[in-house]
Image (cartoon, rainbow, N blue to C red; front, side):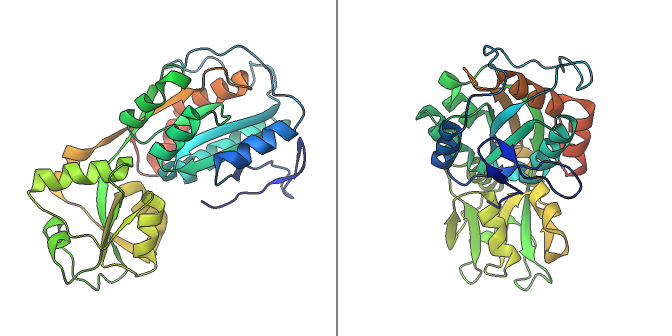
Length: 286
């Protein structure tokens, strides 16, 4: 997880020269908890509600958002959610968003253990369901599919899923307990292939990094991750990807400290603007 621009102190957001506040990706939930405990007071303090499938109001019609908003989100959402967070903070200069990107299963576990957050976005419904005791009603906001990723130039001459069974190739997969790993298992089953991975990575970002650095001949990640890596890698489509499409749900966290900002972020993700950011990154619209 990479860090965005941060804070200069409790409740004071460091501004870029452009005048826009930015979010910091916090690697562990403990750090988020310490930050929120140290700072004085939440944002609006509105009671928790239920996520709605349609925006409840534009930035111009609602009261300005203030305080801190903590968003837990799947690693594959880092680029898009950071962009949307920047947009929401530009509209609300007194709002500071903290992102915690990681494996959806890990984030769900952290939430169940009491980690403070306002929004949770998962890479599949199963991990959202695992956190259902601490979240409001989720809404599906996007879909994503797997794609084979190889280093630029495809040194291993990989052409399809069958190559993942070749012992002479170095292969990386997501850990089976995270959404990209679960989707990969579904795709391999559909293809009748038993993979021989050399490494299981903690999330899709770590899996992609193996291909970017040329440490493996092939990996299986989301097509949005292949696109975000640019010319550092090559993507290879395969027919069984359609059998392993992931639905992405988002929900406000029950008892969110900054419910107004949490709902505003969910509304932005579901809005036409938010959907365009997602589809431009390679996601399918909800």
